[in-house]
Image (cartoon, rainbow, N blue to C red; front, side):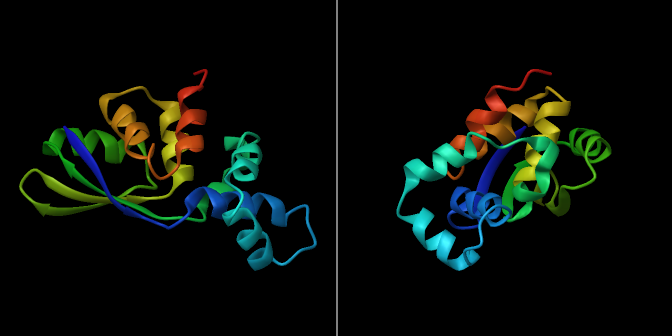
Length: 138
């Protein structure tokens, strides 16, 4: 099995931090986003408080991967999570789409080769979230 992140929403962690602050701040989301975009330390601090139980904040993004896997491997993943979308490209190659909430919930519910690949794949675009997933207790 081989999983490669192809593309994702820009500034995912800034977007998530903005989402978190909009619930407690009277500022416009666009203003919050612009302030956070130039302050990565503040984003990291805010993301340190992320809880999967309030996962809707993790839905403000999109990630797309290319997956090389056998049909039985893909079927097992499809049966485990209903919120990843799979599109067959050709024999053994799939396009997979989802958001960080799906990644977080899946990573906390199951330990597998695919879970590990998902977590590794987001380290460059969402390092703080990937670190959070690395601290899972289940």
